[in-house]
Image (cartoon, rainbow, N blue to C red; front, side):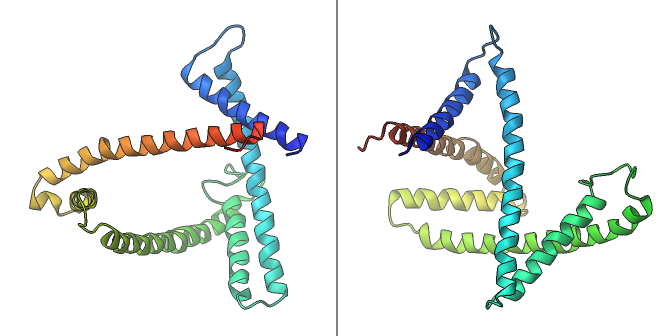
Length: 221
């Protein structure tokens, strides 16, 4: 590891430890650490915006090269580039994310003309595509659950029963079958599921900390 990489690892670890410390301990004197953390978070938002712009440039470069070289999927690349920039342009002109919502620079007539186009692209195309993708994902998850949650042991049987109770409780007709399914679903989601998620997140956080320390001290376990 070079000195530059080591310095970067130290900065990343120090910032992570700083945010963890300010989350649990409130310090206002001599420096308000919470206010300092909020200010650093504003810089983080700016860096995320720059990273998003870099991703947009890279995505454009990759697909434009695909179009120029007439690769087998160049038509899909053409559709992606046109759709991406068309949606960006109409969103900036007339949408809830417009850069000039008051019409001080952009003529209101242009905004009124572009607004139906944005609504069509967003509500008729994007929302419909998202709904279709999530519907297919739901069927895929259900089939994977059927293959994985077979009653082969006590643990898999518990997983199968919990999954069935949550699915039944989530269904619109659960109240007609038995009102208790909703209460069981809420209890499973509020207590066992939350406890498991927190345990996984704590394990991931400890793993990240251990990996960061290992990288900094260049020690192999």
